[in-house]
Image (cartoon, rainbow, N blue to C red):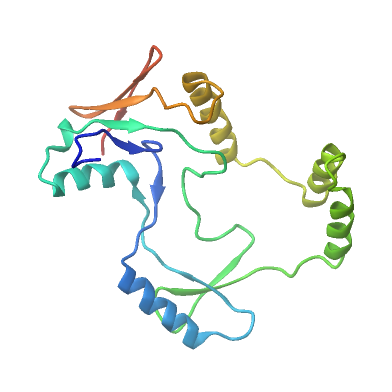
Length: 196
């Protein structure tokens, strides 16, 4: 995109992701394999998450461009995409290992009736009982909508209003670098997000 002079596309100015070099990840995976016992699950300590917007600006700078002169297009979250990654779920127990940056995780065992419930849900999953499948699944799991999921729903509604219900439509939000922030414009909507 930089070479072609096109706007850089990012999902959301607040989105963060974890990054690690391939050699470091490969060594840590080999270390984790050496520690593994049957049933072990490991996660790598990947440090602090990086804002995707900062990464885009750094790439522009590394390409010899002034980051304030490179336009950035905000595409919006896709269905199921998270604004921030989580390395662990709340119900997981995390403990250090003998190797720094390799963490062992464990969770509670599955409920005794999980096979019975899955069998029940599979029997209903014939295409004619979708509402019942959803109701029974929610009752079993006791799903509570997290704050992040609610934010995704609000953002996806706003984006749908911008681009229309057609998922193949191109986004109309364009972020233009300005001194001290990013100005996002589209369909009469303007908002400024301060740069770090």
